[in-house]
Length: 388
Image 1 (cartoon, rainbow, N blue to C red):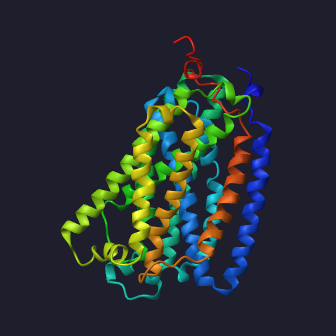
Image 2 (cartoon, one colour; image 1 turned 135 degrees about the horizontal axis):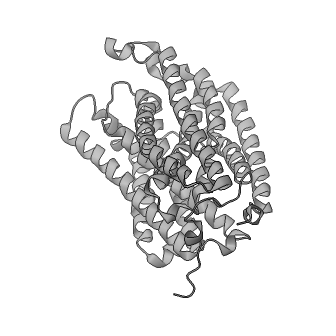
Image 3 (cartoon, one colour; image 1 turned 180 degrees about the vertical axis):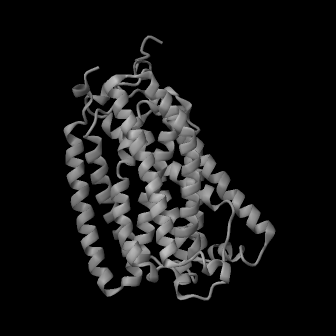
């Protein structure tokens, strides 16, 4: 196949610049607000950062899963997933403001922790662990992107075997590092609280975010040549089923955590839910239940909807918005336990980070053909089924 036949359409470049401009303006406004209120700036920055970080890491997880299973379902989304993983250097750069603003976000920095936690929760050790996480993620993204490009160049079956062989250990490493990062970056907002399933809950949310963005990307690319003739209703149907699966997985982890903690009723665990259920924060929680689970669950049961990209994209966008609300619900009550507190920077900073991230993502989409041309399953994956 000719690589030039599958380059990103010109509209991707236009979206790249629009996202960059919007993100830059939103960040400038937010930085101006941060000069007057640095504590609110860094708290809002954590919320926005965690949302876009989740999409990046979720894309890495789905990419590893696709190589491990070897299914044809992942062939058409491999390039968007790889493009998202290649934003990791930017995600690392965007972490730097948090590193300088830790004192505005985490109460454990002021002390007062038990000895076993005080040894773990220190600024130097916190940053060292974060550096290790990013090193692991960057290594995984670099290796799988490099092997994918080599596969395009040579179509060597040994490369496919290597991708599949290392995908399994890669998923294990992903799970461990994301779990520890979730403990460090989110759970330690309340250093007295603990949940053994919290890392899996965060991973479930990342998978949902990444799949929703991937579907949105495919629908947008599928409106123009060359991908208009490539993406078919069966592709959207398969991806809609995967999105449905990830939504169910996230819901399972969420309910499991609630049941375990509520049944245990331990003083170091239950206050986390008390804050979120016995104040106005319960309205945010109800919004998450409705938009992140109930509504997508009901709509994605429809086979007809999953096969229609014009409808499926609205479900994906709804889920992305619900994911942003869920991240807000996980973090903001630790700063404002008395009730809902929505500052304007809670909106502008996620938009600013998102604009920069989406611009870089669009640029990455333009760097390689939108299909893995060296994949032996490609012909089967894009074969039209009009005859049936």
